Image (cartoon, rainbow, N blue to C red):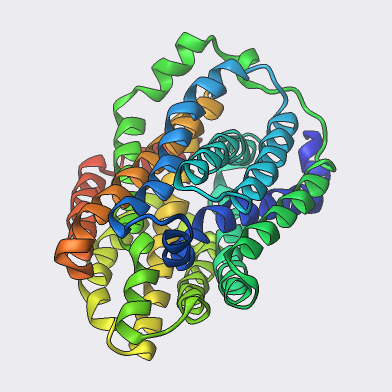
Length: 392
């Protein structure tokens, strides 16, 4: 038994807090987008780049860093990534121009590129296959905590004290996460001991991992195209402030928590089948989302459903990847993070291109199309990964 198994509570809390910090730093931008636009004198069509640069930086730095750091212990990577995130998020609170904001967000992307793959790879290396979705869901619940508590609190804090206060608070969470992560057991990284870098690439480039990455890219693209501009659309349609807009995101977080904290059901039902159901349900959510903008209660209900099925999709794709890439999980999860944040970048950029001229309904249509293609790919993937997963 590894040292990681001896301290499950310390390990879980450190990883969850880290995901909370990453999630708050990534998602707080949506309810603050209008304030950031005003503060930096930037039109709405360009504000999507605040999200896009974060995603692009993470996408293009995570795989090279995973190879470069193959022999570095996971704990070192986790702590380094979280410390950098705290500093970069604090820098976001100090900017005065659009260019400075983009640079600070790029640094946040590098930090997340260190932390997220190492976090998910740690789970793949230390949790048995038959309980992996449950453990993955528990750690991914950090995204739920960020949405249920962090984003609404950040929105209200921004409304009371200004948008800079929301970034400062997120930086404090990152510092607390560094302290928790320092209690992880020290272990050498297993990647370098198992395979060469070329062998790792061969494992990750097989048809099934590539298909799972494509599914992940499309579902994330659909999410971020809508999520990035939902706060703006909600404030315009309902005439509310950043606090109420942040509370709408809390409804999504409640749904996300309902799914991620019940990952054992996904282990029983099957990860591919669960992913297929989630993809088609998300398509229906995106079709309904523009209608919800005209009534706050309806919007809240749609957001809860959205969170449930987005959480299923996230948990299942990450779990499938850890099982499809044995012995190369560090690189595999870095590539997953790359596809995730390419989806973030493309979704945010596409939404920024469409939103000013065609409105939020057109943005939701883009999300529905991307998610529908993902659903088709899940069916093409078939049941082979499920059969192998039982012995993964």
